[in-house]
Length: 532
Image (cartoon, one colour):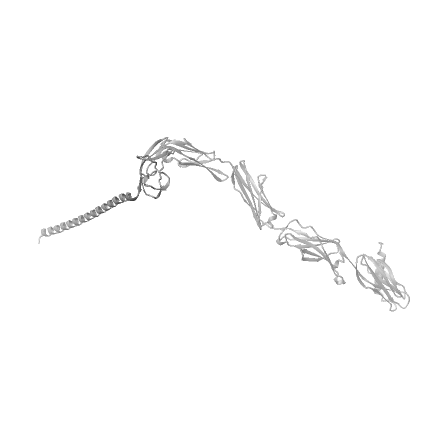
């Protein structure tokens, strides 16, 4: 038989007897207190008293540590110490040969040794159910012990703690966006207020929850489908609908090389930008991946690197005299086609040619050659231009330099006179008689001294040309000398015009009168020749 089994059996028997036997001869036995609650390991004094009309034996039966501390004729006080179990002590007596007992209702309470919230997942999707487990060791009595789940200071749920040791209580929650970064914890509560004590409680160390939202869509990848070798180009990758966007990680990979990215976070989106440069032709895979929590979204594309130099455009010869034939030719790489301005009849190909007989008007003309190449379904264009130089002698005519200028003395004027030619000719103008220079291109007040007839000559390595320029200056009597003849001429011309108009008008009247007389004579003649 195990230790303590016999006393326990005896106590049970005594309790049964105390229940069945009302006592002998009206004797009574009592235990004080009849009901008690003490902490585990605590002590308690128990008073057993009896009413019997004769001397009898009585005492306290228990397996707990006890010591008699006081007595009287019909009472004894015992001290129970280091109470570890809920074993109800019995006061017993044998009065008139019959056994009578009184039982105490003893409750032992103790606090849990440990309470802990089980580790949370590293990331929890918003809206998905999450089971939180609170673990507790020790504590009792269990029917007074409960577990509370806390979100911050807010009580979410509570459940009783079972009898298993250690006990585990599970709560189900559905995390929200606003729960990101929130602390959760477990709190045990031992409620002994019904026993005349108080509510005891203790809370576990908090654990932070990280919630997230990952959209079902894939990232949007932006990159040119074709890129010329040696050029610098940009890649962009965006994903919307993230939470928390600032915790997302973005990777851009070209081929097998991770690109250095500049990442920008907004409230619910992330944008990654990267600049890169490739020096080899070929098609490279381009990937963008966005990871958040335990999920990853990926997008893949490709970029084709190509090399396409400018077409070769030649003018043969590049500098010619006017009325000389020039050959313009454009050549590009195999697989491409060229178009030369001025050539439209020939079928497209890698070469185009044009011949023309040039004049001075062709000087400075630009010829352009456009080359086109199809790469990955797209057409790439390159344009090359060349300027034609035509050598021709000096030109000095009315459009270059007016032959007659009339200015008012004192006004500010600029004489514009320039010669054309290739090479550019030199222009000199001097006044006939004294050789004074013509003030070309200067803005200055006009004086009567600059008036006169000038001889301008333009010269270059390809010849020369001359032109007379008359400069008139209006001043004082000079103006009258010019204005009066002009007015007289105007009056004369007006008088002549008026006389001519009158003369023509009179002729028309005479012609009309003559026609009228002829018509009347004809009518008379017809009347005389008609018989009565």
